[in-house]
Image (cartoon, rainbow, N blue to C red; front, top):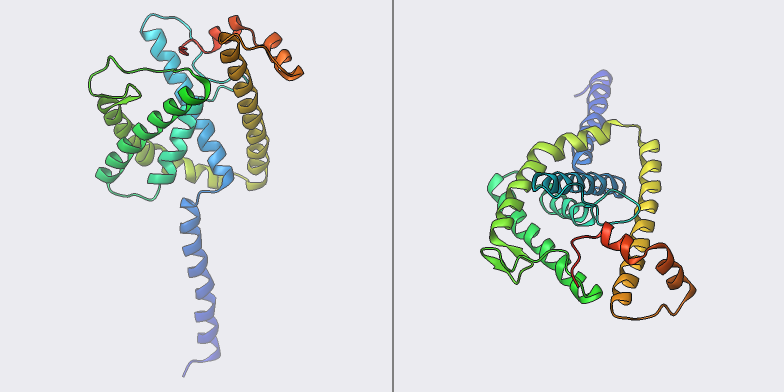
Length: 232
């Protein structure tokens, strides 16, 4: 038969176990705020990587962010989110590699397909590359996507989540909301400018005041400079 002191000691331990368990789950939990920061990090790293790659190829400085207002490359930002959402709970390296390779290739293929169908342009074409898939991705690039996923999951993701969890939640949530609004605004403006850019190429006149304003602000010269890889 338990004494009152023993009962109190046992009951005092139970909540601690529960909170420890929920805290362990919380470290891996993906919410809206963390998704915003992961998108920003992935997009920024992608922009820096592509910019350095152009310097290494002797092309000098080239705009590689793929947007107008922010430095976050959309393809890399979305790719980072897909990698984390699909692989964040995986613990086996071979699973991360295979799923990451297939997922990275799928993201690249789908975004290329959507760009061509919606805008009538292509920002990358691997038709002359070995083992390409309809010119939208290649088996070799997919292999690199797998290696990238290994680095993201086992080197970056866990420390990043721990760091985000250690920051004051209220300010970080407020910053995430503000940045999400800016990213959404950037996407809307960029898509509007791209639609008018392709429209002007097809000799289509703006039919609204907004379209006319976009034509004045985002001229062909501006768009060619900001989106040099786009081919009609």
